Length: 441
Image (tube, rainbow, N blue to C red):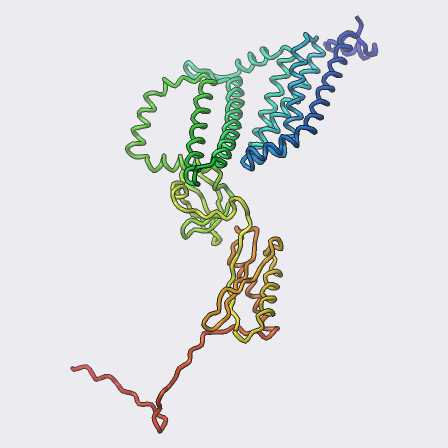
């Protein structure tokens, strides 16, 4: 059959080695395209109808432990349903080359979009998610048009040999996809198990934390051995090395390995992450990076403190931005007993509200805390959202503003007073001073 293309264009394409689809292939391609559009429309409708319900169910079952997947649930459902229908459609009928190409493009795009939404929902780095989605798209498209074996053979030929091992582009692509899939699975499993353990009844906070740590370690170990099996790595060749490595750990690397494991747990647990504002002992600052051995904390003085990972795992750490970046600042102020307290408290509230770093929601507040020896003690409670900028400068700004307001309204800030009672005084008004006896020479 002649191709359904204008003759001049057809002759030019044929002359340049392009095989044109026939009328029958074009009709089959149109049917495949219509079915693909129907599958995509069904996926869109399913995402719109089922997405909000699944997002609500996800919030109830998993909570905020996988917060990135909740608001992407409609996208995941849309592309997932479309990819499932397209996969059934592509394998149910022996399509010709042109129709298989169109279905392969649609199926590859839907599956790649599903992969991208899922990985981004797990907070996978953007470049990793896009790279994995691209590999998935190419693999599905090449499989649909029957060129998958050609691509794998070509990628396997490009490489170098290391003894009995061969490092090729195919092995590298397989490694990337396997590592990303295991990484996503570990993150998802850890957060689902963490939420399930957190909601368990009959366990106190310490027991829940212990079981969460054990579950995360078990998931990582299982994923490691599963990945080793998928990649076909023979662990027997590492037997001698693992024995020597174990002896090295036992004799001299306890602290190093302990800090390494603690750093891995910190990265997985995300209880402390770069950008957080923490207090460890006398060190206050924001986390610059979490290294293999230590965590870098930069203080307000510009000094960089390197705190070993084990200290952050074993000692108490204040994280000012773990679940919420808002931090409350307490500013103590005392006024004289003769002061109009209502006016003074209004001025304190105004000084806090006018400070640029103090939040309006939640609003600042003023508490009367005690009646002191010489002053009525108050406390200004102000909230800030940028603790990495320090809290001392906020206190200074509020107190400077309050000083001006007190001066303008005639409010005194009291100082300590002591009353001295003299029971007797000499008649001539000159006190008698007795010197201590001189020391013997």
